[in-house]
Image (cartoon, rainbow, N blue to C red; front, side):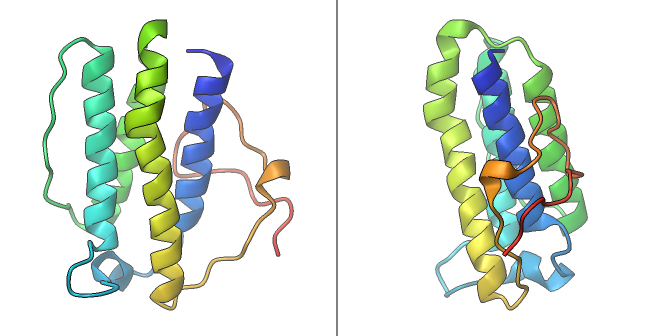
Length: 150
């Protein structure tokens, strides 16, 4: 994968990890209103996005809508499939489409999770992401500590 493509995946992992680490168990079922998705449903969708992206990279495009797993398992599922995708061979001609589809969608959902976490009363600190220690290939839940929070 190209450096920017891999760096984008590492950025997603860093930001998603920040939104998910330390969230209380009840966060998984929080609803902003009666029609909104819960964080667990959003995270299950994010896992589905990367299952789909991996299937595209492997030339066997398939989509599946997953029911959310228990919170800890769903968090692990997301980072496991993100790692599998990051390690896959993605043909150069697919990278733009994968970025504009599942990757950008997952970035949007990461922002939703961060916003829902604050709405649910489980604050996160702000951070200067420009100076964050984001490293290509580091796409698991565990990430470097924030360098400059506010």
